[in-house]
Image (tube, rainbow, N blue to C red; front, side, top):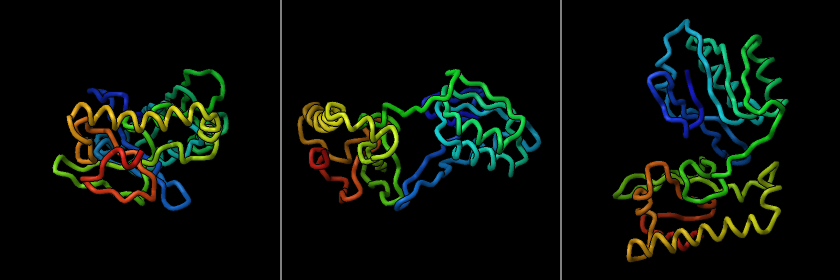
Length: 217
C-alpha cells in the first residue's frame, strides 16, 4: 500500500511515496522525491494508493505510470475528496480500478496548511529556489500559496481578511521565534522548528543562512 500524503505516517503495510508539484518557470511539473517506496513493491503485484485530495488526476496518473514500469498494477485508489473530472481521468487511464472516496460527490479541495507559513509541507516547491545550506542542515524554500492567483487560492485570498491573517502570521512567527531565541531569528535557525519546516519565500528573495526571517515577511 502506498500513500502520497506526507502527513500519513508510514507503517509495516504503508509506504510513503513523496511526490511534489514543482514550479518550473510558468508551469508545474510532478517530481518524485524518493524512489525507495517504488522498489518496495515486487514486480507483478497489485497496489493500493492512498491520497487526500485529487484536483486534476495528473499526479495519480504519473504515479500509476511509474508503477506500471515496474509491472505493479494499481488495483485500488482511496481518496478523501476529488473533483469529478479527476475521477473520470483516472477511470479512463486505469480501466477497472476500484475507487473509494470519503466525500461522496465531486469536491475541489486545497490544503489549508499552504496558507500558514512555517507549517510542515506548507507552500509549493520551486525549481528556481535551491535549499539554503546552513550549519544546522539545508533549509528548503517553498513559495507561499498567496502568490497563486488561480482557482481556489485566488478566491481564498481575494478576501482581504484571509490575506491579512496570512501576512500577519509570517511576521508574528519571526517575532516570537526571535523572542524565544533571545536574538533575531535567521534562516539557519529554521531546522530547530522541525525537519519538514520550509522557508516561505518569494522568487525575488536573495537568501543566505544569515538572512533575518523578519526581512522576508
